Amino acid sequence: MKNYLPCNSFPSLCSDSHLTIYQQQQNPIHVTFSQASSLSKIIKLVGGTKSSQKVRLFDHKCQEIFEEDLKYLKYNGKIFLTTNVKKPDSKYILFEHLPVTLICKGGQATIMLIQHRVTNEEKIIKFISEEQKNQYLYIAREAVILEQLKHKNIVNMYGYKLFPEKQEAVLEMEYLKGGSLFDFVQENGPLNEKIARHLFIQILDGVSYMHKNNVIHRDLKLENIIFIDNNNSQIKIIDFGLAYLSGTGVPFDEPLNVGTILYIAPEILSGKLKKINFCLDIWALGILLYYLIFGEYPFYGKNNAEIFIMISQGTYKFPRQVSFELVTLIRELLNPNHESRIKLQEVQKHKWVQGGVQDNLHITIPFSDLETTSKEHYYHEISQGRHYNCQNQSRKQEENLILPLICKQNYEK
Image (tube, rainbow, N blue to C red):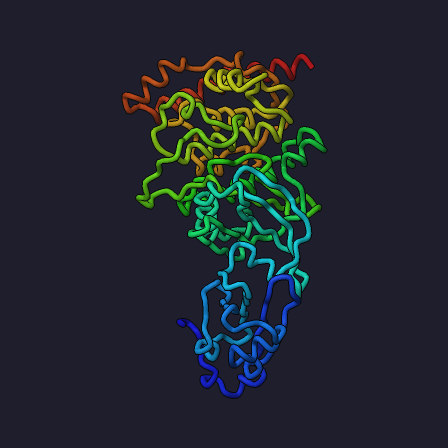
């Protein structure tokens, strides 16, 4: 065994230090080191009738330990014991916890609420059911990615175990007691800009942290943003099953057109994007912000084909009055050209995000009525390396076109 401390390293602590022995469907047993110094003693503690040939011991990492390893266990450590000659599988977590309720069973994984047998602490476990074995790589990747992400707006993962030979995985995660952002808007209706900004800034903070750590979420949506409790103030991003760790050099042979239809970016539909890019999350942020404000999706249809057409055409409207700054931000987030789409750093510095909103300037004009530099000319300028100047001119031209219309509206009122 490795990474264990021999008892004689701390002789004054050995007699007082404890181990906890966990056996499936049994209450945990707390013992001293001297009580569990041999396999025969452990067998007596857990029942006394077990055959030593059938009993196997494993540490907290699910690595097998033998009698000679017992003296090297860490203080206040854990032993997982099986009596069927088998190794632990993803159900090992239930040695230490009680199942409370099944939260959901999706295409990639099953999510269950559990409670610790000793501390009563509640956690979420995400694991693979029998019919989900082909999703192992997604869950394993989520575990590896979440292990690197520690942020106040990203779900906290306490630990994970991978069993590649069985195509099983289990993630221990914090229990977020509030509902999803989708449920929040469904219950409360479209949000005012102040509340939407408060929530959107938190999403931005989480996504910015991800991107700085080379993680592209690829499935940002309202259902994957959860309130930590019922106070509806702090939110966290969840579900990294489709996330991609950029810059690793690891081949990525999965299809690009994954995720949720209503959030899919036009560059995916057109085939212009050849590899995973941060621009996909930026587009999703535009869909998120639009829904927070208007309570509906910008691109919709009776079926997937109609939705794809709307996304490809970039056709959407602003159904109610909103600030001019919000209009410009949404349009830059939902820029159909991914190469010139606003960057995350620019989003964070945007006037609307910073709260620089002129309350007397509101707009309720359909997107189709706001003429700007033609897309063909704009794309030509980009291809010729004149993106920056063209973009600035386009924004200036847009302001000159929109502001008179807003002022006219306000005057007529």
